[in-house]
Image (cartoon, rainbow, N blue to C red; front, side, top):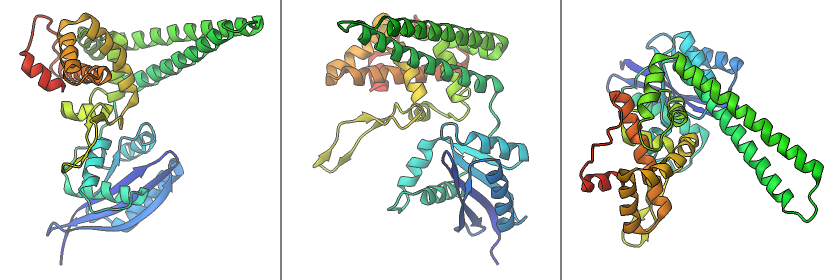
Length: 346
């Protein structure tokens, strides 16, 4: 009689729904997918999910819950499972996406996605997820709030510019728009002060922000955003994973000699990270010889300025990751070989 050696609950997370698939691995290394069900993405749904899993799996082997890091929608369930003491793994979406491509699946649905996650969990040796540092969670809340305030202020400024360009601007409208802009500016200042105080209160985070801020183009706010959006690079194991998580990895479509699309960045990642790296990359290109040379070389190669700028964004983010892991400030005097530099950025 075969013995069960591993059990996994693969969870596809959406804003309001959790699609769960159960799988098990036998001692002859044969996987089996045997049950699937949907639950509400709320506390009541979490309780029903755990009871359903317990009913079907019994006490033969502990069940590992596996899910993707999907924005913020997975967090409530992750905190619930972690508090209950269940083995839990949260995987970067790029890993599941790449694994899904290896399966013989023609239809992409929530159920097939949950099944793919379950199979991934059965086949891989996975680490336990740990609740992120409270500082990173609070930083993410504040940095995202600031981003929303800045976007709202930009909308108000555009409206003011359009109103002022009219033949007969409405004085009351102009006054209200100016008040909105002043209000948003005040809010942004308050949020940035909270961010600074939060970073300063934690010695380790403060040190990390100081180290990463030595990189050309990168300020303390950018460093705080990167730490917040990656939970201190908790799920990141290498630079390639980080680029994929940010959506700065290159996607290329090619088949034989007849089909060849232009390489593009995937944009299937954390848009907050991409936004955070945009202005720092432009500043580095203007003021840092190392990144200016990389940018110029890439533009000369393919003539696409935006593609070269994205390459600099990716390189800055990867260097920040290395600096954080090694706790080493940026060394301005260090100039790597030009060939290695261009190859890494391409």
